Length: 334
Image 1 (cartoon, helix red, strand yellow):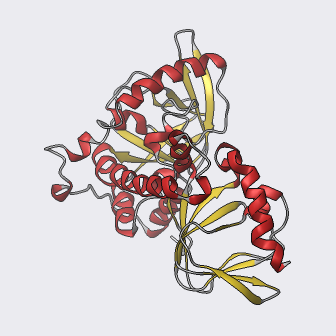
Image 2 (cartoon, one colour):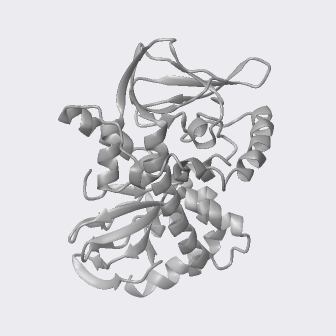
Image 3 (cartoon, one colour):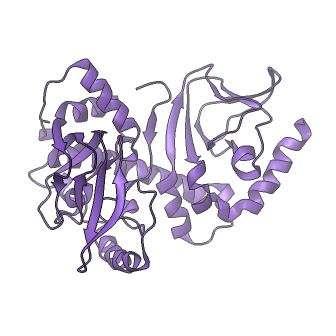
C-alpha cells in the first residue's frame, strides 16, 4: 500500500451498535425503516452484553496467537495487489500493519458466484467473511414478514463478520445482483487472531485520545466521545508530502498524532503544527470555504482524520466551538 495508507478506521465491534447494522450493513449508506430500527435496537442491547466476550475466542486455549499458523493460498502479484486495494477501501482491515496485511492476503481464497446465487443465507452457521472484489450483491433480512432489502454491496466492501465475532448464525442473506461476483474469502481463525485483535488495540488507543482531547471537553456524555472513534481513521505521510493544498477543499478534518506539519501560504512557511490534537481541514468541512493554507509534512508523520461524511454525526455537535476556533487560529495570518 502507498505512503498514505489508511492504518485504522472505525472499529467493527462498536459499529454493530449502530442502527443500520445487522450482518450486512457495516458500510451501508442506506437508511433502515422504522421497523428495522426497532429490531436492531433490540439487537444492540444483546451486542453490548457481549463486548467483553467477543474477543474470547481470539485468546482462548486453542487459539493462542503465538501458536497460530495462518493458511496460505498462492496468488500472483496482480491478485495480491488487487486484494490489498480492496482491503484499503474498508475500515475492517485498516488497523493492520504491513506484516499482518501480508498474512491476511495470503490466507484469502478466491470465490466466484453468479447472478441470483446466494453467498450466505440468514440463519446458517458462518465460518468465513467475504470481501467484494468485483460485482454487486444485495443484502436482505427477514424479520418474520418476508425479506426486506437493506443495501447493495460494491467492490471493496465486506460482509459476514458478525457471525465470526459473536459465533452466531448469519443475521441476513446476501445474493449476487450482477452477472458475476468475485469475492475473497477469509477464514474465522485468521480473522480472529489477526484482524480483530489489531482493531481492538487501535480502538483502545483512539478512545484514550478522544477522552483527553481538549477540543471535546464541552462534550459531557462519554458515549458521544466513544462513538467518534468509529469515524476515526489514520494515515501516514512521508517528509515533503503535501497533505492539503492552498485553495482546495478538504474531504477530511486531519488531527496531528505524531510529527510536524508545516503550514504554508503562497509557498512561504507561516507556522507549524507539532502538538498532539492540533487539527486542520476545518475551513473546508466546518465553514465550507477553500483552505487558506497548504499543509506539508515536515518529517514522516502520522495523522488521524475524520471524513467529511462523518462530520454531522461526530464533530458537528461542537460546530460553534469549531467556527470560533477558525477565527482565532487563522485570522492573524489572513
